[in-house]
Length: 487
Image (cartoon, rainbow, N blue to C red; front, side, top):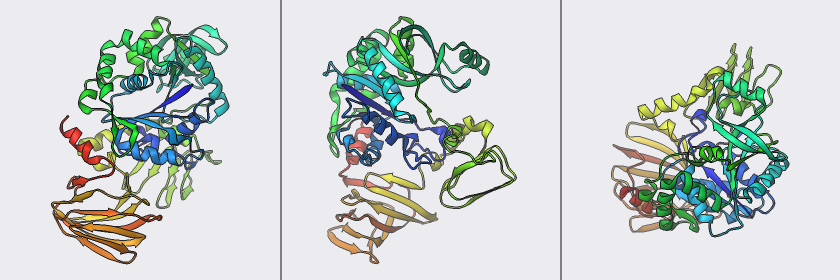
């Protein structure tokens, strides 16, 4: 049996402004309308012998992940289980906890898949997985290498050694991202493959490797594992990791913690994948997904190109026109625009760093923000006011809450709002409104089968999202805040 372990984390800073900290790269919608996370889950579930998933992700990403899985056609993602991290700790702690979770099944092979890779050739991928599973059942740690198509300096490499079987080699060593000269030598030699970051091993094999190469990390993971508790808003399929205990695990990748050392001792095998592969790690990679026109231009949305060459434009809410430019990438979103030369796309992450330094919200949030109950979009704000569009899913409800420094006016546009305001409860229909005074406990719910859409007008001397006191929340956010406060 194969248990895919989907690792869904990382901010994808080189894909800003579409990828943000609160809605990172795995949730980014590609030109074909799908997400990388959805594609990864569908690819895993299409493998023979797979009928469930284990996803390791941030607690804040649980509900968006469930939304992505719910859109998969076959329904097999209904069997998904989750390990929910309170914060990021890289891939080694995630893999260690997943292995501890699966250790009770001796016949299981863990297939570790990052949530942000793109693979189109399902048949070739399935064949490579079959080879990796066969190798993993011998007790080795299997990884997937990708035959390099060019001297890429943004990927790590693996040096292949003795052939173990057709398409499978021993791994001599893992090497870091090389210089261009070194990358050229690697490609010319034919002995090196790109390190894909995908793995296959039994729980027993990887736990033994942690014991040998990273015993302190494994000890901390073993200490953390018994404290896993079901998320009250999700049931036993989603287990939350204690923040205090999780903080004791080192922030380190599985490559550094285990694979590099295991390779030196001959414990790692490389399956040379013949499938197409992209980590979609930059806007160049995204632009390569779209066939360009005769002038080398491509993109999505409404665009006009005059005397423009080799330029990629992503347009969302408005038309984007380019005149007399070349070799650019233009990414237009409702609250931020990126204009970058193709030769400097790796430096987009520096923009995110600068935004963090300034405390600017656009490094973290989109103008439309996903919540477990739906979404809100900031339409306009100024001194003393903020206007939002709020959409509540059928059957969903916001928390019972109050605000100390703002009042709220709600106007229902579509659907029926079930409103709690103090001791009063009422149904507010389309073209009707209600008022929530400062300091009043209130709740908004949608008990009907259609989405609820409303406009919220906030008034007050402070309108930050942190001016909220939750008393009851079906998504467990009151418990999460308490856990962080004691951490």
